[in-house]
Amino acid sequence: MYFVLLFGLLGLASTSPCDTSGSNQELVLSLNKDLLRSLEEPGRLPNPSVHLALRLSKVHNLLKEGEHLNRLTVHVHNNIQSSLSGNQPVTGLLALYALALKSSCYDLNTLTFTVGDKSETLLMHLKKQMEQEKEYITFNQRPLTNYYQYSLGVLALCVNGIRVNNHVVNKLIKAVENEHFKHGDVESIDTYAVAAMALQCVKNAGCGAKKTACNIHNGAELETALSKIKQKFLASQRPDGHIGNEFSTGLAVQALLAMGTPVWECAPSMEAMRRDARGNRYHNPMAISQVLPALQQKSYLAVQSKDCHNEDDTLVLEPTDPVAVLPSKTKVAVTVEVVTSGGTGTVYSLDVPKGSSLLEALNLLQEKNVGFTFEMESSLWGPFLSAVNGERARQSDRRYWHLSSDGTSLTEGISDFKLKVAQKITLKNISY
Ligand code: B12
Figure (cartoon, rainbow, N blue to C red):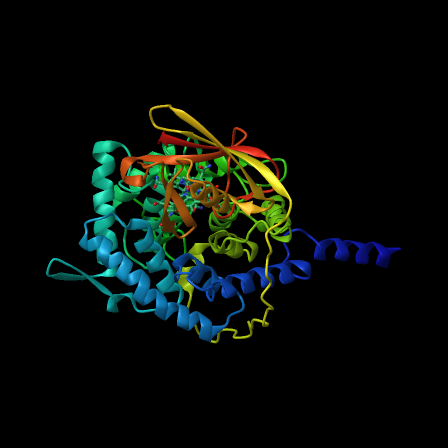
């Protein structure tokens, strides 16, 4: 009887939602391979967030990771250089680049950018971007870019051992206090998550190794902000375990782990992500890159202690047969409604092969020459819809084309969202 009970309990423990043995390990491995495979997709640019996730994984393909690192130091580097030269804010990309390089133990002091005739290191440029963001917040109550990128900036400086200016940190604390993190008109859990990792890093840096006597400017406020974020996560946890939505849960779990939450407390969210992964919800490499560290019980703070010695090198990709996806013969009826900034609405109708992406549908609609046109800008998440019928809505205008289906906001962009049933898509130019 005793043994039956003992084995029963052991059995239960080994299938506990947070352990990384058995099926979870296979799931993690398969996501890891998907991410590695994404590096080889034709036309896909090197992505610092993907690099970071690959480097935080337990298993590696050091050759492919090394090649990707080289591509990052060319493409992303040039991209940042041209933004800096054009005086365009580039805080988030610069921060992700710094995190990615650190995760590969790259000596960041060897990288410089030149503006005018002055050449300065990457981290010095990030510090300057943060100063500009901070000044902008003082006069406009919001950053030049957004609080997600502002938080990434604090995080990247901190994990690279740079002391972050107290005023910069205080602006982040105040923004948490005043609940300024919005994604469109809903709360941005993703932003709270990155802010939590950034503030936790600042806290750890001020507390030293022994964490006995902490010397943190505004320590009490920082502590309150961290608790507030934890409360936010609790309040935004859905009955199915997601914190926010399926694409913010990975970052939220990373943040909880960084804040010292025991793994078992994140069990429902871990399970939700595993369900999503099994259901193939995470096919965008950006989505995988934010979830994968969390599924391995790690956060971006782990970059701080990365030493890159004696690393595993067993991750191999089996050759895959190219699968030709033929357009479905079944059609679905789609109505596309365009609502301009002035509130004028135009409705278009078309039939598309079932399973087409919204992007494919918009292309078909444009080809019909019925007066509908659109433009896109590339981003780490894929194509961002930036203009419809000649009307632009971009970050610089603080407007965007909001996407919804039958009145519900889409949680994916135009190239990821698939049209499986008849529906009305609304593209609405709104300000934020
Ligand atoms: C800030 C933000 C926005 C801002 C961007 C402008 C600004 N204020 O800076 C606004 C409010 C405009 C926005 C819009 C949308 N967003 Co948004 N956004 C974010 C957020 C919080 C941070 C992005 C960022 O700055 N990254 C850092 C920089 C360095 O990376 P980047 O790639 O260069 O950043 C640019 C792109 O990410 C782009 N962008 C922002 N959102 C989206 C969404 C998609 C699908 C694409 C392709 C691009 C894109 O804007 C960024 C700034 O220029 C992320 C959270 C996250 N986890 O990543 C969500 C996030 C990327 N957004 C998301 C979504 C769903 C949208 C919308 C589709 C919502 C909708 N129903 O309309 C729209 C995009 C519609 C379109 N026109 O194509 C999802 C994407 C999930 C997915 N699987 O695709 C995320 C992950 C949030 C979430 N958890 O649901 N977003």
